[in-house]
Length: 86
Image (tube, rainbow, N blue to C red; front, side, top):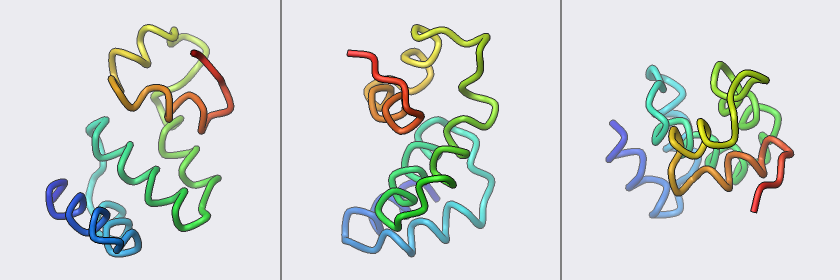
């Protein structure tokens, strides 16, 4: 499912990727990141923020925890949530 959604997204079909990921359980960090990117492209910023913050970013999680979970996507995740870490 993630591979198909990635193909849709990379071929400029963010809405198809969004619908595919939204229709299935999006539990891995990679799926959450891609779904959030689709939301940004579709101007659904609040939904993208909710996807990334839902159980992932809270006051108990540190910067290192987020970097560990999201890896290379951590900077995007933090910036979307309104927290800038460079």
